[in-house]
Image (cartoon, rainbow, N blue to C red; front, side, top):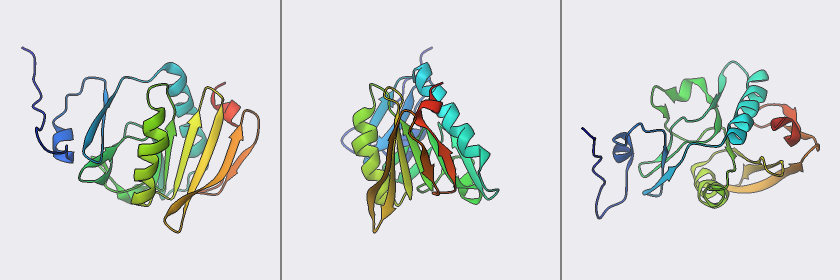
Length: 182
């Protein structure tokens, strides 16, 4: 027998609606009450996620944790995202994920998600107080670092290929974008 998921009609999606979605290999996210369904990522995307996670775990202080997605990050009742990698305080993580913005959100661009990551998620991370947001483009390869200053994101680094990336937010990390795809 096939299971049927009842979708809300005439109203925005909520966290509760998202909880009822099937575990079918798709990524289900909400941005301002709009359901976004993404297919499984390609291998290059997952390679970059694994490398970023490894690099972040190497220098991670004990009170923080670097986790690869999917991890639910509930930014509002109508906004639940699954960043590709997060860094959060261990004490803030629940068995259902994170109930507010992480210290760092990392999104790895894929052909089908560029607009969501570059515009929609960027705006929601910014408005929810996510201190640092990295956007990694594996096709170039490049990394854009945005940091929250006075409630707005400011570009603090944009490096490509073998250019060195150094940051201290949320803690000291250094690498090159090219190292993420090797």
